[in-house]
Image 1 (cartoon, rainbow, N blue to C red):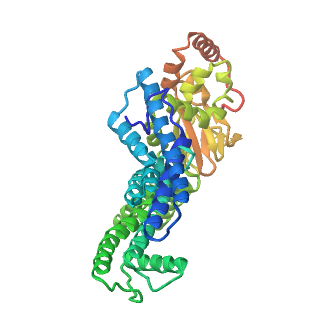
Image 2: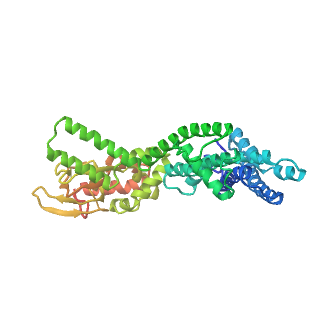
Image 3: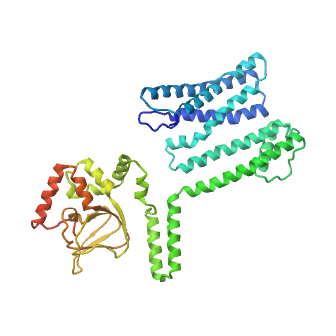
Length: 435
């Protein structure tokens, strides 16, 4: 387990410290190449900048050590190699070597290069965004590229300046702008030819930048395309499923009318955002978290059922986890009169009619309503037919699942058993729960 993302309960991690690390990394990536290739400041200014790096990186290193000792005291196992890599990197960046070298009258450039070690923290940017509430992981990786690509262009431009590229331009700002322009055209292998290398080192540097550009920009473009596609993975899966069905229907020469019904179904599936398998999504979560998420989504429709009046929150939580989604098409019978029932239904959206054997409509139910709840108590035949008016999204609760859950709560089980005996002795169904 990594000190930067501990999964053990009780192990704390500060997003603010991570942000401080990221600011230090970006500052090092932008400032130090400019200092080495373009700008010359008095020693006093260099000392101030060195002090800022010392405070930021030193605080991050100290915090990482404190968190490590707290984790050890709680018995949390931490990957020491990851810990010490982070601590030693931050400690090296924090050392005031530039100040010491400057006061001693020696070259400070090599010691500025040491502080470039802070750049390793840029790779943690997606994790930081995730903890700050980034709605989609792919966006975090996309924003990482937004940081890395400008840094690469900046480094290439300052490297060109260090090799006396654009030396004929006296204005530093214009010289830097020309160098950025050269870096972008060279990295992208466009090469307009208006700025060209003239010395051997410049030619070798340009060749290296072009080789890096071919690989890097190919990598970036491929990743951007992949990340944009993953921003809505459900849509990709939905379209793949639809394409497979279309291929099947063409191969078997399915009649046009039936094809259109299938297409309408897929359109409805996507419009209601049921274009993904909710059960498969929840299956990746641990049981407690899966139950909490199911309860958050389904609690409102479960607690309306009179049969569950007096049920404990724990039982409601279990039942919410056991609801199975079902989509019915217009005119489809959810269940039929005379057929023994085995499940009840909750309407998420759409309309369902409860119809008698002679075709009389007893009730028209809407989103948030429920029906067929007597199937949870007995296996008697249904007394009416439930038919979808249009497309409907339903949740089904199986009788066996209900009995299994209720069996773990003796007091409520006794209440349900008494209700079942009362209905079996001649009570009739009432209210919304026809059928």
